[in-house]
View (cartoon, helix red, strand yellow):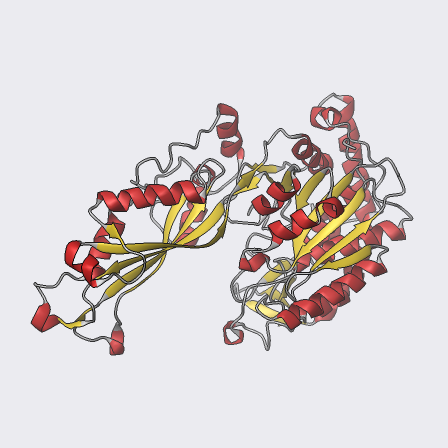
Length: 527
């Protein structure tokens, strides 16, 4: 919608949208809206949304200029202080929740409707580490504006283009955390600016939790949420993180897989040995590790560990919802450079509903100009397992342990002793790392139906995703707070999150403000 919103007469477009919407209501085709008792008032005029977006760019660039790797407590504190002040300027009450020098930020805004429900919005302000030399700009912390040239390459343009009218939806802001997740934070602040300019109040009480260590797995958020359960109490949780579907359609996600890491070490001789003197006599741990890993998957990419998929059951309605997601399989294969996908599911979306087993790295000796003619003394593989609510980390790890033992392996607790070496021909260790479990809410939950109906108000088809593949600290929050949740992604799918040249498309920025305004102006039926 935003292309037409920006390029044509804005008020005429909005009027046409409401005429269509009103016609649907008269024809009885707005059952979803009626079933969730949606009550709204007119949004601020679209030019006010554009004005709020353009007025927020200065603050957006200021926020992006603050380094935010959670390993640096001083940087996190600077971000927390800046955000506290920014929310206070919009009339929020704020406080910082202590977290070993890396505070989370809590903010709340009371609706003028005293009997209104309360919704908690979760975002995070920390970002992935950076290697500045990889970025095609002076610094990842100095945001630049770019536009794709006719040859497909990104060109830096004058940032004053962000203040032009009409606003070009295809401009992009490049900086660390531009999309993940400082962009949505600024969308929320700009949405409140538009509300204030229109003399309006949100239709529900708003609480906001800004996480400071999401990119590190949010190791303390469960304990912090539990300790502050009364402060965070709400009728529902909306997570503003993640990318929209590549189709650019409004997207609503009902869960996410969890993630856990495992380190699998296979032991060989006590020390590296000359391959000429000992080859054909001393077993090579690298070869044995490769054989062990190969036993865990077949040629079609399906995990062969007994029981790995069997707990996941998809209903007919869920399979239908998965099939309705407008993925372009051919484009996915072209973009990833593969001839065919693994055969875990019948589609991309279905594949994400099952737990996965990924080898994220292997090491045994050296290669290239550092290589030596040796039998290495050990070989290591690091695995990451994507979990589901039906197959959590403990369940999958137990299955892997059983599978490895069935291949004739003995587990030692770290470096094997001489006695263990003398007794067992195949010795390995399996060490669990950090991670979090999956979480999912029913697609027909009251909160899910409400957000779905709100997103339908502009006439667009909404992409509903049962469970996305990436991980968020959803389970840690939900298990502590005991409340329903949904995930509402707002940024462009090709934003390069976690990589260099992270970016946010301006069209998505403006549409995100509009989406949040729709939410803020729609009364939640609970409460």
